[in-house]
Amino acid sequence: MSEQGGVRDSHREDASATLVVVDASAIDEAIMLEERIYEFNVAATGIDDGRYLSVVLKRDDGTIYGGLHGHTWAASARSRRCGSRERAGEGARLASARRG
Image (tube, rainbow, N blue to C red; front, top):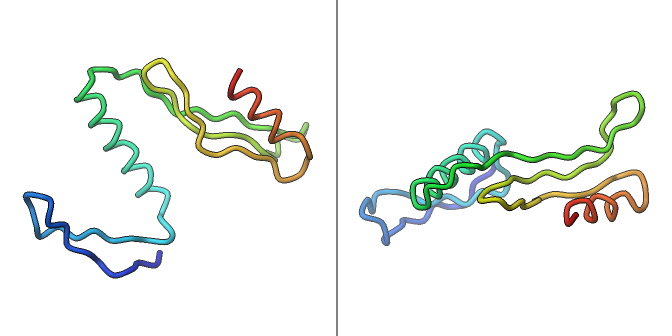
């Protein structure tokens, strides 16, 4: 993971905190951040129905070649990544299913 220079966050009560911008993030850090945001939203709204959502495109042998990933929360769904690297039209098929 490479980091850019840290910046002091003077808007927080704890001004000793440093904001660090990274150009690549470890997956466990991204998941931790998602979980903290979810916990904040649950505390603020009382809505706790969130779940991760993945839809995958698989070959007959089980190999994944495309899909979408996102989450549900508050009776809605949001996909964050969608695509297929091998078959033309599959990305559009996934996007259509996502809206569906």
